[in-house]
Amino acid sequence: MRKKYNGVIIAGTSSMVGKTTIATGIMYSLSKKYSVQPYKVGPDYIDPTYHKIATNNKGRNLDSFFMTKEQVIKLFKKNSKNKDISIIEGVRGLYEGISPYNDIGSTSSIAKYLNCPVILIIDGRSLTRSAAAIIKGFKLFDNGVNIRGVIFNKVRGERHYKKLRDAVNYYIDNIEIIGAIYRNEELEVSQRHLGLVPTVENINTLKEKIKLWGNIVEEQLDLDKIVEISKEMDIDEDSYKDIYLWNIDKNKSTVGVPYDQAFNFYYWDNIDALMDNGGKIKYFSPLNDDTIPNCDILYIGGGYPEIFAEKLSNNSSMLDSIRNFDGTIYGECGGLMYLTKSINGYEMTGLLNCHSIMTDKVQGLNYVVGRFLKDCPIGYKNSIFYSHEFHYSKLIKISESNFAYKINRGRGIINNLDGIFKDNILGGYAHQHSVGNPYFPSSLINWNK
Image (cartoon, rainbow, N blue to C red; front, side, top):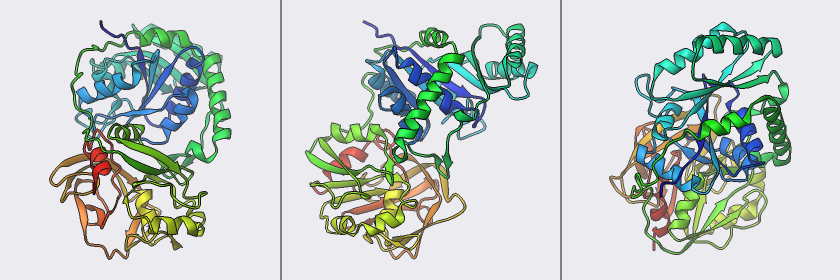
């Protein structure tokens, strides 16, 4: 019997139109009545943590650069199977991707893959009749994208909203006006050099903010219309059921995963994939704990270790515990920095012979295509992976020369090389996803077994 999925994409005409606050508010409000599965389009660690607070369900990522159409559909069905409705927050503008000429990496590609209706957010400041032109242009640009609703944000007041509503109703058919969010400074959210401030740093304050966003959305938007539009989603339950997501090669291992204010950039799909391969996950805090847990592998993800460098450096018992660990260590971006001798002069583990410093300019902001030069803890020689990098830090005084992967698209650590590989220790800037690198979980679990 065919399974019916309900879903809607909350997209924007551009970045900074209020997608995250409005989408998160919608998720929060709908979660009072429904089981909501949240998603974020693109490589984003932070927005999904807001979604998790709003829905009490883990936020997932959908990305047409890492994933084929078939993999996007299978991953969506895997995570939405027992949910009432899925809310997908878009990335940047609806049609922005990696190229001016195709929609790879865009919100629009996900909308087409999933046959999912779109609700478009427009910054309404100084607009009336022109809003209709914008919506009409977005609708005509790609007839494969089903734009079914519009939300106006930063509207001056009821009179302004009436003009917007009248213009859209006069010029455009088959679009629902979901409502308008009036200008409100409480809908702003703190930003940092890699995006929003992670929820783990101030979770109680952010819970209150998300509750506020939900209350505003509930008062000013027609949530019943969103639910009705979500029923237009059309996915065949039987399609792509045998598609490969990640490799399975089970071997019981315990994986220590740092999760605190300094390290919290993880895809839940990676955690799932490690568990599918026999991994038992143990979380710990390099900031607050004295030692690592009893484990076979350390998977040190990204985050903001530079913000907490002094406290990390002062936790000498934790540094010694990691230095004396004889299992496999994989550090990614922020985790890579923690494995070096220092971050901005503060002493770190020193397991890799180099130093990390922060800069004023972004050092890597790319989708990445890489090739493994040798077998290593996250892949096999000559296999290709698809990932991403986003960092303001760089490594200096590099005395290491053994790199595990070549970066064919992106930057890496130095000279388009990434993944410093030393004994059982690997550290790189490329953020891995278990669909873009399907051997990541099985290789990490089975390394040196």
